[in-house]
Image 1 (tube, rainbow, N blue to C red):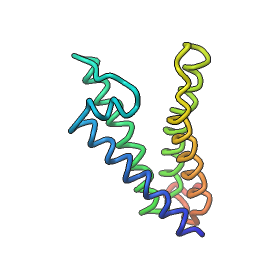
Image 2 (cartoon, rainbow, N blue to C red; image 1 turned 90 degrees about the horizontal axis):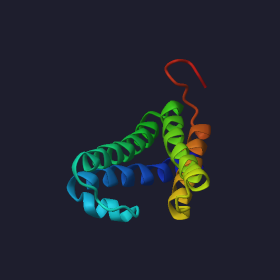
Image 3 (cartoon, helix red, strand yellow; image 1 turned 135 degrees about the horizontal axis):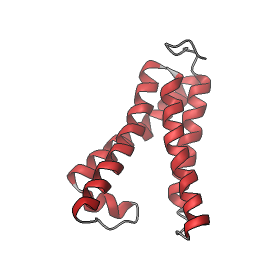
Image 4 (cartoon, one colour; image 1 turned 90 degrees about the vertical axis):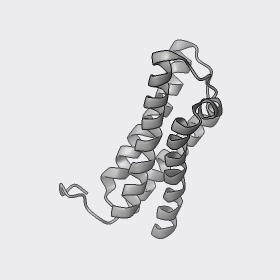
Length: 130
C-alpha cells in the first residue's frame, strides 16, 4: 500500500511541474485553465512568476518527497496546497470571490495525498524529526 500511495503522489507532482512550464511557454492557456485572463505589464510578470513558482514548488516538493521519502517535502507541499485552498475559501467568505470548488477540490485531494504519503513514509528527516 505504501508504494501505491507514493506512486499516486508522483502524478500530481509531474502534472504540477508541467503546469509550471506551461506558465512559461503558453501563459495565456495556463491562465485560462484556472479561470484567469492573462494580465499585462508588471501584473503579467507577477502572474507568470508567482503562479509558475507555486506549481513548480508544489510539484518539486512532491517529487523530492517520493524520491527521498523525507516527510518534510510532503509537509511542505501540503502546506502550500492546503494554504491555497484555505485562502480560496477565505476569498469567497471575506472578499466576495467566486467559490472555486473544482480548484479547491484538487488542492484538498492533493494535500490529503501528500499527508497520507508522509504518514506512510518510514524515513526520518535529516533533522531527526519523525
